[in-house]
Length: 242
Ligand code: SAH
Image 1 (cartoon, rainbow, N blue to C red):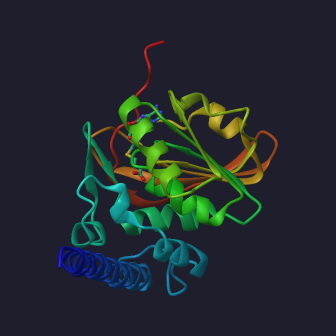
Image 2 (cartoon, rainbow, N blue to C red):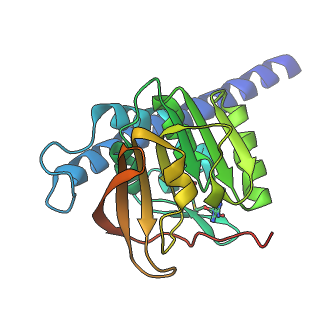
């Protein structure tokens, strides 16, 4: 009798988990369609072509709900930024997709992210690149993100604690660099660590205001082109004191 009760109970739990998983799949797919449509609309900045299919696929494969404190699908798959504690936020999915698209990541690429936060953007990049190195300045976030990425078996991502202004020379040079915190200037070490043909995507502008999402392309050693693509609002890029 007891065994039967336990069996029924475990079946109920399994069914609940399966339903929760199904909801996540549906809501994640809906999120992908929302950002696909938004990117193609007049409000997007990419025109009729919209976001690349590879980027949309990575967005469809990455479990955003496992990167946020609530772990709730209804919260995770709305196209909104979400607080992740310690005054930081995980960006709106459309902005994550837009930055990833602009970085033009290919399967053999080595990519740097500055501002690991929850690890979500690093996970998206990990679906698209050979290797991702990501730096976070807040110890608790670096530790939590490293654990999430490890638990989800993102074996091609390395997380480092520190100030990302100086980049990560031992991991580079980079085909693409994505910075997810806003600074008034482009950090010269990041441009230095970019390969020729590589791109840096970063919000440039004042803290606690709107910034220009900027794409810098290294066209020759010591030579870059820079274009501002969209207005965005990111948390500030902070500098370590030492
Ligand atoms: N990409 C993240 C969200 C980033 S929020 C995600 O997908 O969840 C911006 C992050 O940049 C914050 O976690 C903040 O602590 C971090 N940050 C700010 N200045 C930094 C710096 N100088 N070096 C590394 N990380 C920095």
